Image (tube, rainbow, N blue to C red; front, side):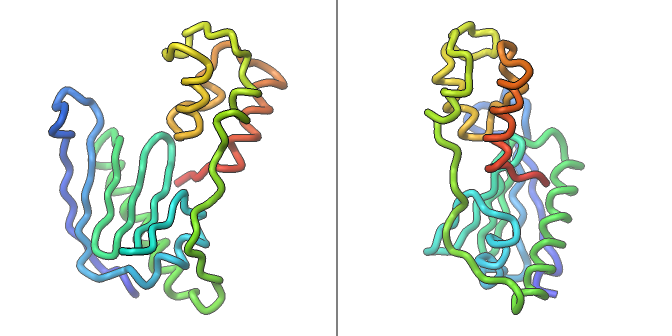
Length: 174
């Protein structure tokens, strides 16, 4: 077992204490740097940083960054959600480490959704009903993983399915 234990700290963003979401920093008691290329292959990391090694995952509008001795998670609803994600990551880290002989390590990030490809699939009405000023802004937010096809009230039927299918190629679910 590579990762046995960690200590977590839950907090609100200091830059704006009125933010509703919480953040978590878990200090890892074991160094997991060596597993990161294998974990990147298994989880399809959004971005992989080589020096120092770090793996960035995107999931449901949040970023999860795994460093050798630390895991950072943003946009959490509560401490229970942090615990769920940390325990899941601990299992994934240990499984990837145990199976590393059968996993081709990858030190490149996954392909990213393209803003213009997303925009092509939107109605381009700039209706603002989604909470952003233009469809271009919506597309940029969707490429970041913050917005989804369900967030566009103008999309329905085949158009919604088309955008969901496109974004689904880049999705990561925990």
